Every structure is written in C-alpha cells, then in structure tokens.
Image 1 (cartoon, rainbow, N blue to C red):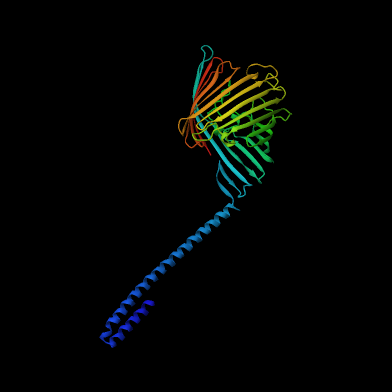
Image 2: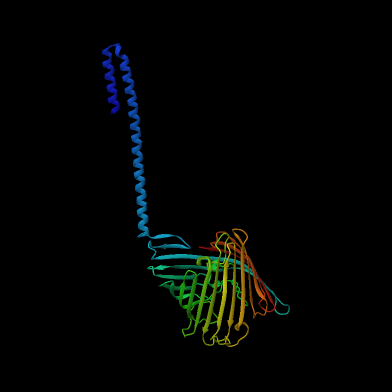
Length: 419
C-alpha cells in the first residue's frame, strides 16, 4: 500500500510540474529522484521485517519443542532422579538417599596343563581347554540414606556368593550382617577384576579356576578413619570340605572369629582396591595384620580337632606409580599337633609388577610353604590393559613344584571385561 501511495504522490507532483513551466523541471526531477530513493528504502525495510518475523516463528517453535522434551524427561525420571556411570551403572534419587549400582565381570580363559612326574610313579598327563573363571553380577547401593546393601550372584555356579546389609553407627563405625568376604588378608579383600595375576595359587593345591577367598555368614563390625581401618567378624564355622562356599551350615555354636587392622602410611584408601599402580599414579603404602581363630568340634573324616586352630597373617601393599609390590607372611598353628597338610605351617608370598609402557605390565609371583614336599610356586605373566581393568588381556605361565615327584606347568591366557 505504501508503494502505491508514494507512486501516486510522485505522479501528481509530475503533473503539477507540467503546468509550472520549464523553469521548474530541474526542481521536479530532484524531487522525483528523492521519492524513488525513499521507495527503495521502504521496500528493503519491509523485506527485512518479513524475514525477522519468519525467524521469530521458527525460534518459538524450537523453544516449544525443547521445553516439551524436557518435561517428558523429567516425568520419566520422577522427582529429579539421576542415572549414569560412576564405578558402575548407577540410578538413584536426586538427594542420594536411594541408589542402585550394577557391576558385572566376565573372565574367559584358555589353559594348558602339563604334569611331569618322576618315572615309575604315574604316567605324565597333558591337557588343555577353555573355561570361565568368573561370571558374576553385583548389586549394591543405599536405602533411605542410612543403610546399604551388597549382593553378588555368580552365573557359573548359579549361587549367591554373598548378600549383606549394613548401617552406619557414626564416627567411622559401621555394622554388617549377612554373608560377606572375611578380612583374612589383603589379597582376599581385593576383588577378582583388580587382581594382578590370573589364579590364586594355594601352595599344595593348585586352583585352576576362580580365586578362593573366605566368605562367612555372620556379623561384622568395621571402622574406617583417615589412616586406620579395622574389622572384627564372627561367622559360622565352615568345614574343610567347603571352606569358601556361602551355603547353609548347622547352627551348633561352632564359629570363626576374625580380626584385621590396617594402617595406611601413605596414599588414599581407594588406590589400594587394586594391586596395579599405573604410570603417573600416586605412590602409597598399606600394612595390615589379620588373626583368625576357630572354635569347633572335630570334623567327621578330617582326622583332627579344629578347635583352637589359629592363623596369623602380616602383609604389606606398596605402589610406586609405575610398579607395585605385595608381600605377605602367614603362620598357621594347629593345637592338636597334626603334621602335613593339616598341621602347622609358615608361608611366604612375594608379588611384583612393573609397567613397560602405559598399556603393558609384566609381573611375577612366588609362594613358598615350609611343609611342602616339593619346592614352591612361581608365576610370570603379562597384562595388556586395553581400557584399564574394564578391558584387559592377561597371559601367564606357572611352575608348581609343591607336590612330591610332580612338576606341573600351566600356561593360561585370559580375556577380562568388567563394567
């Protein structure tokens, strides 16, 4: 409309100019040029306003869609709940009072076993095969802010390894009841995925599969401070036939009492959750002492009285930011004077690992027990960390000379995935 108006004004101006005479032509020409310039300016402004209106409509539509999506997500989460990965896949309430953390471990390996015995005893045996040393899921978290739970299910054995509940007593103290790992030594307390080597070699008994650690059914009092930790547990006694199984036992007052004290000379508690110490990581030193005593009657078929059997372990875990060292000494005393596998013994273990670069680590492990009829157990291995402990490949060779007249060699290679 503004264009037509201006055009009409310009036309009338020219018409009037025609009656004024030729002496006014110059003035009319100047006015005409000014009118055309103004028309062009108004045309450009109109086009720009049209573009601005279109962009505004598009922006309003985009903001509306974003707000609608945010409302949908908030309704799905419910009261601002959180979800993500933090040491495991975690979901929980915004205030942290309710949470669930899920972890899983898959270890699959190939092993070749060669038993070379002295001539005239028995025939040599060789064999290889595949197995899954560990396949489990772990569920842990908090309940109403003041309570926590920890449950692990083993897919290989179709059993619950442990299930316990805990609550805070204040000032660093806490109580746990149910089935749980007993704090017998530092190695047992470190979880499967964070071990340095493949297998837990127990002198005299080579365990070619999952690690063996003590799981007790009972109650445990714990304390954690800035540089000191302490555990005291009372659990059901477990016969020698199933020392690591959390299955039911007869409640006939037979029990194990276990005490452990740890002192952190240097470092943080979390760094000692694994043996390895990667290049550039912090140095640390942790020393501990454990004591276990059994109060139980004679076990059928065991041939001796287990009442009063005592185990004392002293160990040290050291990390140097590129290498690590673990040393332990165990003294077992049997009050009935039995000898051999069930009698008194002293055992020494030394394990050392060193990084070759940021992804490759070489390690060695040596165990010696004074009651062995043979010599000792020696393992040498290589870890390749694809993504830390979450994705790792390990290859290891072990020489076990602890059995009289037997030399056993095991070569194993294992893939580990952990989340």
